[in-house]
Length: 338
Image (tube, rainbow, N blue to C red; front, side, top):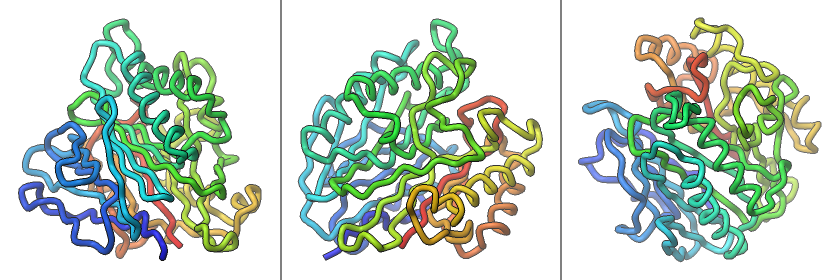
């Protein structure tokens, strides 16, 4: 039996219609992108996180991971989790606070500690939804940088080296403090992918905060049944950054194009071969595409560009939220499936 880990639904019309979990297999975890936030819970027998990512009356989305295997679930220190013998999912939330470092560190130590204790030691994908991401905290430090410091301290506490950091997205939200979720695996054939067009985020200079963002540009996982199988590539939130600098400031169309160029090179044959992965992939292979746009006025422009470049028949969800840097206007993520 195989695990359909990344089967998703990105078109649930509203939360009032209920979360659609009618897909094949058992639910490992779910995230709702809604007009409110809610603590993660196990009310339906799986971790269920609601993050405030759309305005009142706007279209809501849900994302569901299924598995063919039996699922066990639990809760520790407010972090809900589930696992199936091969994969692990957990979700948590840090309450809104004047300062986040300590609370973020403690929440992520709990989550990462669970992966260690339950022997799902390779965290390969993480999402972080940060309210007021570009606002200063009570000490005058930008909240995103405050968050990055706490997350980095958690990775330090668990002694997770840079070459095993997960692919990740750190994006603004409309409320709820900081919500997060992650996926981990027992599979050993997980490879981090970096992009020569971009400096590894964990090596950013000190101008970007007291601790650099802790993530890989992408992770590749080959199914356990066959080491030669092309596998899945989980692409981190990607923006208009070359080296470590933002480019095309103030030009949303150019920033969107640069982000797509970064992704295209990241998953190209030229770059994947550097990491011992083949064959190369094309930007049109990207699925489950989530696009974050800072200004509402730019949403249609970004939608048109992404549809033209990626393809109109692909899953595409757009969110009008802030980005991790105040000079970034758009961020794009996705996954390349088998």
